[in-house]
Image (cartoon, rainbow, N blue to C red; front, side, top):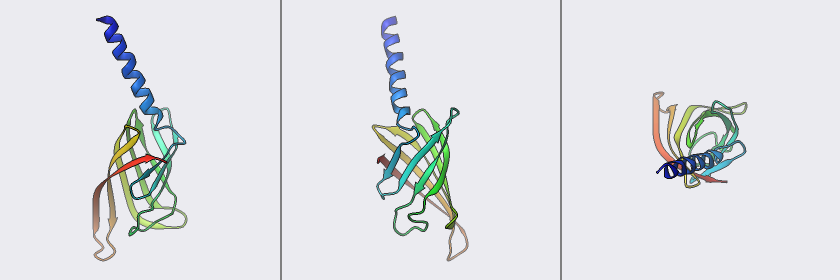
Length: 133
């Protein structure tokens, strides 16, 4: 019985280590819209930084690398983009929250912005699946 428990603990730890390795610095991900998310750094505390390039038509700030900040905790991930850089200010923020499994990132995202036609705050919610680039 003890051998079974030790084997389970070892395999569980190994699976966790393998999944966490895929959320390491230098990994890049592409979603179904062609947008690219790259992890540049993950601190010892799980703090994440990187870049995001929006490739989805119909949305502003396309093809502009934007700073990403977030968190990694094992196979869990959350990251945000304030859609503003030296070239462009889209006055919006998106946050993705999800997990890594089967060599993919499964996320739900929330975009908040001020609508140009009404001047009112607007909120969109959808999902993305990211694949390794």
